[in-house]
Each structure stands twice: as structure tokens, then as C-alpha cells.
Image (cartoon, rainbow, N blue to C red):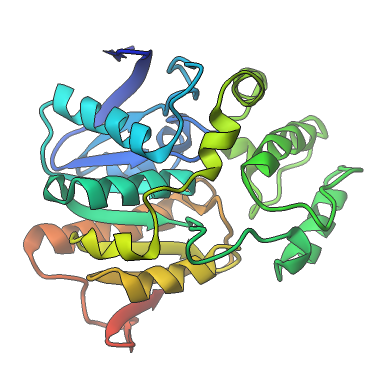
Length: 308
């Protein structure tokens, strides 16, 4: 498996497919398998897709520090330079969306287009408690129906700490012998025994918990620096939708696509729908045509909005 030696870590990556270069950045508690087993393999039918494990995740090593966004941007830039990639489509999910946004603002000349999938930004949206998420009651009921006796408490913040708990819940769903609820799809995040152990070790032994809470440089004024055409791709059940609408207002050239009946992990839950939306957007960028202005698209504040 290919790796890149950085001064303080080894970064694991994979490339699949052929064609225009697309870089996929996973979220916290996941690894490149989030994409490989989901939407990434469909995108690779027409493009060359670069997958990599963030530091502390997957097969990348776990240094004691260096988990703030500027350092993660440096990691990504080193990988692209190593592979000779200087103008890529960049796709990020959840925390990976923050990495992608930071990269696009700090290296705008290297980003051909940007896809932000279900990301929450503190500058636009405070942390959400489960009780304030409109779909929590339904989700909790599904968890209970699938054999879980201790779902998260109503006042739990939806943040990276909850991801560690979700890994445990995903394993409990798996061991009941019943399928995981489609909107939860916790098993799709590849949080098996090894993944949960790595995640717990990172939180306990590194500066990651403090670093993840620092969203520098993603202040509201930063987003004007992002010049690439941007697709905001969010689930209809997502707790991150306030961020989606704020980004739509702040980014110079952004489009919002809301996929109904899916939540935060929709790139893994509904990989074909995710890949279709991304592929359509990238194709329009590559041909210079912009987002297609045909049904079922409709105008929204002078931009385009689509419900798939």
C-alpha cells in the first residue's frame, strides 16, 4: 500500500480509476474506506480518484500533535505535490469538508472545483444538541428498534466526541443480526474493532481533541477567498443545514443540493445518489458549462437548488 513519509508521520493513500483528478477527504473517525466502499468507487468509473487517510486515521500514523486545520492542509498539499497534482477537484465530507474548505481558501490556484458534503462550521452554526435536531426522536426510536438499550442522551452535543459513541453503537447494531437503519449506516464508516481502537487511542494520547475544536482559519471573512465553483451537498435530515445556507450566502460561486431522506453519512448510505450529484457537477465544471439550468433545478436567490 503506498505511503508518503512526512516529517512526523506516514500518510497512507490509494488511487483508483483514470481521468480527471478528484481528491476525497473523509471525516473524523472514518478512513479512506468510507469512500472506497461508497461513492468513491462510482466516481472512479470516469475519473482518477485519490483517497487518503487523515493523520491518526486508518493506516496513517498517529503523531502526538498536528491535528489543527492548517497542519492538515499542509499534509494534503504535501501529498498533492508528491503526486504532481496541481489542479484538482476536491471533495470533503463532514470534518473533511472543513479540511477541503481550508485548503481551497489557502491554495485557491490548486482547486479546480470544490464539493462540501454535510459539514458544520462553528462560524455559522453553534454545536447542536440531539434534542434540538428535528429528526432525533425518529432516529432514537430506530436505534431502540434495532436492539440498542442506551442511545445517546438528549442533551448530547453532535460533535466529534459523539462519533466515538457512534462507533460503539454501530457495533451493537451489527451484533444484533438485524440491518442497520438506512439513515444511520454506522457500519459504513468502517468503525470496526481496529478503527474504534485507533480512534480511542488518538483521543486519549494526542492533542487531537483540542485541535479538532480549533476551526482556524474558517472565520466568516475567510470564505471570500474561495474562488472555485462549489457544490454544497447536504442530506435532508442533516443537522448541518444551517451551515449549508450560510455557505451558500458567503461563497462567491456556490450551488446547494439537498438530498432528501438521508442524513449526515449519505455519501456511504446513498453512494449512487452522492456520486451522481458529484459527477454531474464535475462534468459541468470540466466542460465550462456551470451547473445545468434544466428541470428539476429551480432558481433560489439567483443560484441553483436541486432536490434529488
